[in-house]
Length: 611
Image (cartoon, rainbow, N blue to C red; front, side):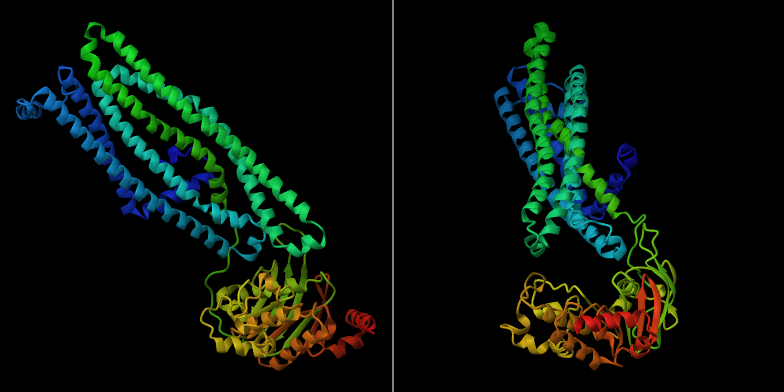
């Protein structure tokens, strides 16, 4: 049945609707409460209409309407109880009963809405959790396919599942009310009920073009919203670049254009939606007046006796308006949220996506060596080989350096070792086992990484060093800082380890940031350490402190140093020269200088530039 209802819905949106249903079914108690309360509200609403009709019939002295369907025993029993009551007393009793029924109807409606609110809130949380989990479980290569801000808006817009729940709940309540009204109306007049159905059908068809127009506008709004988030997040994260290049006005104009591209179709949609309600008001009052006129004309000499029927019919017809509006709102709102659901559904599905490796052999420490064996690599959707037949060994406890000109493949080699990418061909062996068979989480836990571009959170020094390691003690943080030669400057700061370093650590110098990054890499006591151009932008003093820290760790950790500045790697046990994705030379610093090859030329160039 659900498939038939969504047959014309785009597959990604259908996936989201199916997911919303599954999330609802996880909370059966709330869902059952919403349904039961809705049925009770509809029952009392129909009872109210019937009681008011009977009350009017009693008032005008006519036969009680709509009781022919009752069993004889019920009719006789009712007559025996109320037979001695005057018409005035019976009228007041019925009106009071109708009011009581309406109070109960309102109470059940409120209960249904409250439970719907709880259900929608839970669904919103579930949707955002699913989107967040999807982002965090995607492989590094997959995450890089999304432009800045795209994943953030996908997480934010995951609450669309809650909006879908609200719409479905409102629709179900309206449907139950319509059933109650239909029973009352059919009891009164089959012909007039059919006329009402015809009016509703015409209204439904008339709104089809409006729904299509809203869908087009909503597609534009969704696309513009993504661009707005993208540019806003990207430029807010580049305040220095914008001011250095005098690009603040350019960024402001680009953000404002994306905002305008969202606002204009959004405004048009709201204008269209605003016209629906007054149009419904006019149609409702027109229909009510038409039924009064037709009822009067058709009743002829029995106009007085038709008053109770007409009264109830017009009252029911007028009460139909909110329910018909709910059906129309459902169509209009779904037209607005379907583009977002399509986008989110495409993102949440696993088809065609790479994820972080789960499972595999446990890993606690490196015992023998890491070996790159005939490794090739090219980025997804590219035919260019970044690495070509790379082979080398990183023995346990030794320091190996990767050097070469920019773009030679050094950082890509480190990314492969970290498991951020998989080799296109060849193997990376860890103690003889393929890296792809090792548990990724265990592997990363035993590796410390220091990048050239340090990323520090707007948090305290201690929180930055212990990031993602909530069990790390203050003593461990200070020990790691001492090894990284950071403790001395940290304790001289105004608040020491508790000072907040500011956005991206702007309160600290480049050398201080780099030493905090080294402390962060060491606090987990990794057996493998990777330094990717970690000293390339540092002053001489900061570089010497980093080199001193590395020297003190020799033979206690397996270290891979990636460097452009060759003076950084003179003490390495082994040096590998990469150029254009290939291993050109291998050996110690002395051996490579004596070869008069690429390393020797680079060494002489840097020596001459310093001299």
